[in-house]
Image 1 (cartoon, rainbow, N blue to C red):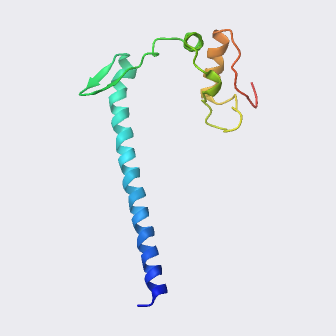
Image 2 (image 1 turned 120 degrees about the vertical axis):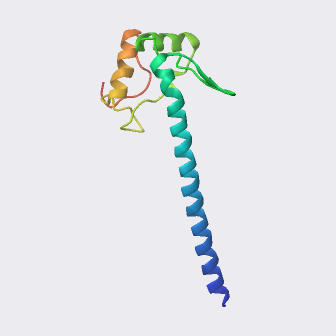
Image 3 (image 1 turned 135 degrees about the vertical axis):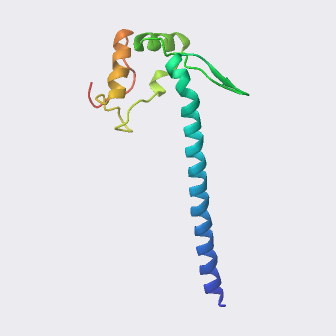
Length: 121
């Protein structure tokens, strides 16, 4: 077999292995996310901490209003200018998707201005 043919065969094998590994790890990630969602569901419904072996998931903000969450974040020094909720854009927040309507409501209730850039408010 010629060297060029061997190289092409090796490249094909490498590509096949890469694709198989990507598919494998994507499946593992999907299973992990499903397991997390399963574990988190009772927490979000009951606002309690669910513990299993060495892990715990807590929904500590579930009973807080959006305004109180923003106020508490400011009190704790959370850099809210580094947080992001938009599903539409990556450069500037859209200001119109449901996630951002809730975010803006929280800042309004806390009586502070959201520090990130928006396309529309």
